[in-house]
Length: 485
Image 1 (cartoon, rainbow, N blue to C red):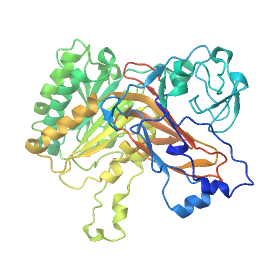
Image 2: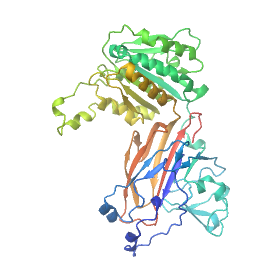
Image 3: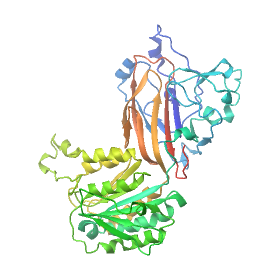
Image 4: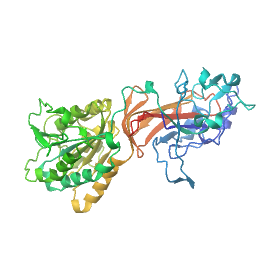
């Protein structure tokens, strides 16, 4: 699980005045090395200190929380200092050392006891046995003698190489699937041409090198599949017009290895704008196209990019025009900003379980009900970008560079994130694009260096039983090279 950040004491000792009034309660004195810091680009708190009691927090009225950017870039400068690479730890025979009660990962702020045979968890105070393979004697100050040789004991952020028990299945190859609207609006606006040229420009730089997979579906009032089997002189197009009984023809040739089928893929992208140049269909069956794309990609997951120019009007996920200028500026306006159809949210949960992240690109010339359709991106940890009244001369370069960056940026796949905090505090809210499994596990089919998540922290008890509060964020993911970390 990595990268992992922990912030002890929230940047300083807690409000001591609040502690003085609680004399009857014993407060555990943490011995903390405040020189060990988490770089702010990974984890940043809203406050420099945490009120020691719930009543002090309530009267201060300062919101407590943290902003977490688990895959923050490791290049550039921060506070005038060069950013350094995150240290990578290869677990030994003892595996990754974790608290047996709350599953916190070993970190620099745990307390070592009995000459290193046991350690006290800094999140839940549980006493844990140290596995013999990980054992090391303590020095006269109570620190392990090998502290400086082990990054997990002297750095605020580390990355562990995950052993087999951290995998539900073998790491999957990076997969990129494109679902493209080819209705008359998409063609005439120049959107289709821009999409094809941006995808073609990114082919050399997609993460995964020889392992990368790619596939395409286009749609108007029917769904069009493309067989991209290596060795074909041209891609084969198959049209399915029955939107209720949608079957997937030739499933093995619809998502192919990019290196093996590179010539067929390039031929497809070169011809795509011409293929539909005379298309007069104004309709869009986005829902059935998404279901078809799900059937093709659900066994691997990956990144799905959806390009849409009109209101989806056919089959599952059809939306109705509900724009009402009369309610603008009134309390009822909020209803238009909330989703109207649960179909996209329910579908998104299915996508998330299959490790599919959906990035949506909208090119509306009129009302398109973004509030409903964008739920798909929100729940699957994707992004939404909108290009209103798309003009290829003006908006083309911007859209093409944004799509290129989104496709080629270093991406983590099949990820989950959990944030833990000290006893006496709890996380009350999560903000960002994800699906919460259970109560506190963020399911993130894709994570990039731009992915940011925010949490609220509140007191769970009247007072905190120690002089410091710890927050630990852990991200478990598959890298583009197929390593689980």
